[in-house]
Structure formats: C-alpha cells, structure tokens
Image 1 (tube, one colour):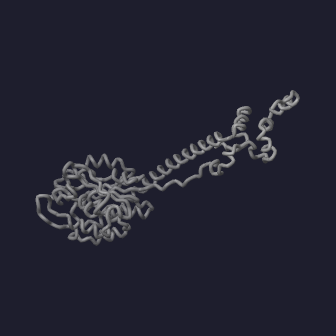
Image 2 (image 1 turned 90 degrees about the vertical axis):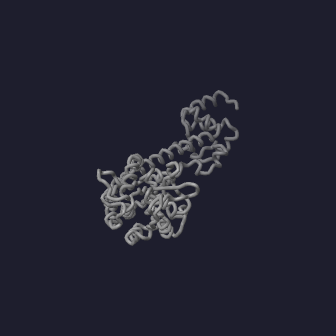
Image 3 (image 1 turned 180 degrees about the vertical axis):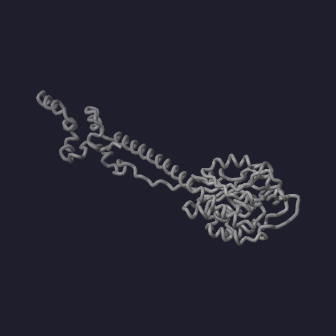
Length: 373
C-alpha cells in the first residue's frame, strides 16, 4: 500500500505509542483490517491461526504436581539371636509414621525382613518372636558341611509368609547370600522365599550350604553384613541400616558356634563399615552382650531395638526434611524451565505481524498473548 505524504506524517506521530504501531501494522495488512475492526482491545487481532486454535492449557503455565513421598528402605543386618532387635526397631518406626516401604535382609535380618515384607505388622512380628520355639527352625544333621541342615528354617519361613514367593510379598524384599564357588554377593529377589532366607542365613560351619541351581550359597554376612546397597537398589530414597553385628572385643568365644560367628564378624567388619557408611541413618541396638545362640534374651533384644530406634528418630526426621527440601527445589526449577519453554514456544508461534510489531517497539509480548513466566 502506498501512503501519501500527509497520511505518512500523521502515522509518524502515531508511532510514538505502541498502540499506534499496532494500528499502523493493521492498516498495512489487508487481511488484518477486518480483525482489527472486530477484535476486542485485549485480544491480539493478528494472532496466527495456530495460536488462536491452541488450547488454553498449552499457553498456561505448567500445573504444580505434588512432591512424591520419600520412600524409606530398611537394611536388616545379620547377628543370629541378636536379630530379635530388628523387631523392636520396626515397631518404633511404624509407631512414628516411618514404616519402611522396601526391605533388605542378611542372615537373621532376612528372617525378620521376609516376615515383615509378607504383610505382618510390627506387633504381629513381636508376637511371632515371643512364641518362637527353637526346635521349629533347628534340624541337627552332622555332616562335613555343617551341623544344621536348614530345611526346618526354610519350611518355617514359607509357612509364615503363606508360601508366597519373593516377588509376591506385600513389600519389595530381597535376601542377600554369598555364592560359595566365587564369593559373589547374590541378591535373591524372586523365587522360593524360605529357600532364599535359608541361603542368606547359612552360617558356614553351622548350617550346611544351600544348593540352588548349580551353585551353593552361604550366609550373606560374609560379603554384606548390613545390606545397605541392596536396599538402595530396591529404590529407597532413605536407607535406615540396622547393625547388630558382633565386634571382636578381645574375648575368646566359649563355644564352636561362637568361634565361627566371631570369625565371620571379623571378616565382615571392614566390609560392614564401608557399606553401612552409605546409609542415611544407622541404628545400632546395644545387643553385643547377647550370644548368637541365646534365644532366652529375645525380649531384651527387642527392647534394645526399640531404644536405639527411638534415639535415631530426630536424625530420621532431619534427613527426610532435607530430602523433601531438595526434591521441592528440583521441582521448582523444573516448573520454571517448563514455563520458560512454553513462553518461548508461544512467542515462536505468534504471527509475523506481531513479530514485526515487537521488533519496531522492542516490546515482546506487547498484547499479553504470551505471559512472561
């Protein structure tokens, strides 16, 4: 369109305001004239068809999604009869709203862990612990591989979990054992629950190795006394390690079982220190004076577990608060980035006429179609 001088001068004066520019540009586009005449003042007259047809959700900022809950995992370590302390720890965690979502167990920890993962409450676990008759899990059979066969332990666990396989338990659960042929740490997550617990609990020299497939397995405490890494692999955001392992304290064991247990404790002590350090919270019940074969101290062990867990509650709360704050900050950054990307996409799909307007005036989003995030 060709403008005569008087009209051009009049337009020049109108360029002093952004509204004047918009009017000029509308006059320059024949197709935009009708739009300028009919559109309300607060709606961009020259918005492209793609922009006008886009749903409002595409132009609006991203909705704020709720922050996911912190998934708590518990790593229950080995320690024979000291393992009753695990019951006390779980009892306090449940009572304070920190019930573990995933469970990993080694040796005695795998026994308690399997029962808990099957859906038992902490109170039910305590009832089972108090009522446990040693003869139900102890089957003496002298052989070169060990004193106990371990079949009774396998049968007991399967009975308690309703004969469910590992993958069908109410909570994700794994039992850690050691492959005898090469010392490889093995994490059982599928298959026969009782057999996995038996393998994880087969203290060398005490229980006979368990044959699964073409391999033989012994106590998981040889390679992973407190299975922190296994709990983390189950997807735990926060891992609570329960360490009940014996420490060599300059005393000579009084029995063969005690000698074997202390030997394993010495071998796994350095391994335990390294793996336990990777936990978010460490709970250490004071059960070192309880012998690994002393089932008469089960009530005392449960009580010590309760005390240790109660003492760790402030640390658990603090760590959860830290994780939530970090997660919320990450969510805020993600929302900001998404809003900026949507804003840029809105600008990119605006009409050529509006882009010319922005170049002339230097004001992006002049008509408010693309709210600045």
